[in-house]
Image 1 (tube, rainbow over the protein chains, first blue to last red):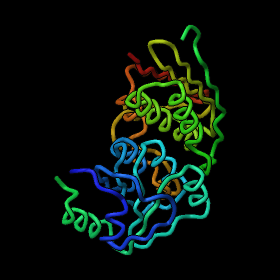
Image 2 (image 1 turned 120 degrees about the horizontal axis):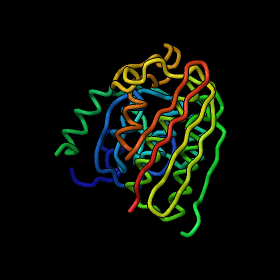
Image 3 (image 1 turned 180 degrees about the vertical axis):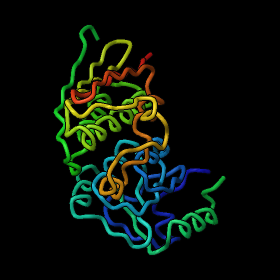
Image 4 (image 1 turned 45 degrees about the vertical axis):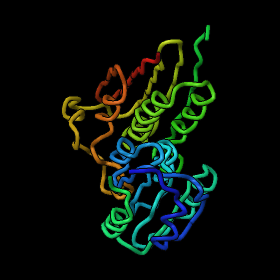
Amino acid sequence: MHKMKLSEIVDSLSLSVVTGGIDRDFEGVYAGDFLSRAMSRVEADDLWITIMNNVNVIAVASLTDAAAILLAENVSLMPDALAAAREKDVTVLSSGLSVYELCVALGRYGTVS
Amino acid sequence: MAENIVFHFDVDGEDFSSAGGASVTVKKKLRQLGIAPEYIRRVSIAMYEGEINMVIHANGGSADVIVSDDEIKIVLTDTGPGIPDVSLAMQEGYSTARDSIRSLGFGAGMGLPNMKKYTDTMEIDTELGRGTTITMTVKIA
């Protein structure tokens, strides 16, 4: 896929910005909830779609240099996770759509090459 | 660099709120040292998995990272229960993590396999009832 600004999908998919900036480009998408899987599969500058909302998600996003975490199904971050995201400057977005619906929407939008 | 640079961390057991903290710090330090991103990524993944394993299974331990001219060495030491069957533990998908741990997103059974996959060498020294020491290296150009 080509590079795309987070702000572009925030607008087009009506995502909420939980914390962080949306001026950054993302280059790929990974969807999944097991942290070890995400740890090895999320590439730098990826958008990571998950329903996990604890503080460890922030550590994984930070270590993998993910462009942003996208929380599906209106999941909200635990308070300590939100604090960690702010401290580590990790962008977190959220949506009422399911992981599947988000993947389909992103695919339609042209993020699948 | 002429001398090795050593970072030492104590890893708290059962403290999931700060789990991964040592890995995040190491990542920052390696970046400051100008290590190439591909090596930092591999060290980060391997160390994070090791750190989480110590938190889940061994009530914590210690982590040392030694940066020399040609490699980054990670030594993880705990005084936990030891690994009864290393070859089984090395299989992708095999996990003994409790359900409460799994609900946090851990327990995919990818910890040790990831550590092996992302490092150039990995040695496991384990003794039941005594603890485990894992030594990993990532060669740097």
